[in-house]
Amino acid sequence: MQVPLLLLSQNSSMTTKGTLLIMGGNCTNDYFITEFAGLIGGYDSQIVIIPTAMDDKYLDSEADIKMLKKPFADFGFKNISIVHTRKKKLANSDSLNNILLSADGVWITGGRQWRLAKAYKDTKIQSSLKRLLNQGKLIAGTSAGASIMGDVLVRGDSNSHTVMLGDYQNGFGFLNNFAIDQHHIARNRQFDMFEIKEKMPSVLGIGIDENTGIIVNDNKFRVIGKSYVTIYDNTRWSEERDTIYPLEINEKQFYTLSNGYEYDLVNRKILSKHDRVAFLLDEDLAKEIVGTYQQVESLAFDLELKIDVTYENNILYFRQSWNNATYRVEYHYLSTFFRPNSISVFHFNRDKAGAINSFDFFQNGTTKWIKQ
Image 1 (cartoon, rainbow, N blue to C red):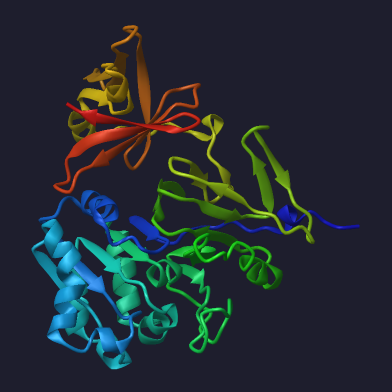
Image 2 (tube, rainbow, N blue to C red):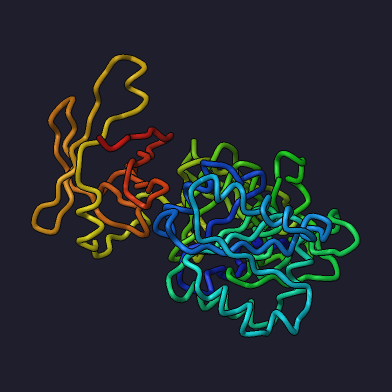
């Protein structure tokens, strides 16, 4: 008799506080740098780039370093530092770690993830990154910089990136019992994760496609970007049937989530309206959110669909212009709010200066609302 693999699963979770922005590759663009800037408080913040996953030929001149900084400098960042070494002694030095610990946010580039593990695993650099997270700060990683965040290092082989579990098998462990693959659909990698699942059946595997990412906070993540995140959690989820199906040991199935969907790491399931719990709303955040928002999609039809957000007696209210309906919303986590007893979710976004400028309304699809 086969035992459903779900019964053998262990929890996955964040091992630190703070926020992770994990991207699947080709993400050094305005969309993701805006997300990065907004999450750390604006482009006046101090940022550190860690390019150690890259080949030395891209890092051996001042021109190379200038090119590395260019997307961020062009965006408006002025306080940009580089932390990079191949030597463990330097990775344990105060000189590098003091630079790192001054950061409001860190961006780990793509390349080969084994180089990150070789240089920084079990060094002060790894400890300093965790310290930043525990201070509530942000670490972003794209491609190789994404895979290194889990405790199981995917494609960490120094000879070939096609080997799923190579000579470097341990990442930085910001996420426990977790394996992250990237460039996922673009490189047709959907079935590669099963090589890891066969050896480590309890691990939570995710594959993130290019121009796509997840924002992880408080043991939950939200999908952002243009493509899909693939989930390998020993279940199959059907949105159409609103059902989660446990899989048996020999079943090799996965499911995908697109922009706006959220996932609960600890309980290993997509977040539904029944999973949302209200938490205390910070008054400063509430005051930032207050204002009038215009639905972007309605402009194409010459309509003016608006929502007025007000804050009264510690409660946030939404009023719809098209029918004057008013309802309260509850705070969930990060900048996510929900309407009680409803599948309606509101994800507030910040611009590159760190100010609330829009929200994405998610309810079986996403619409964007811009602050007036």
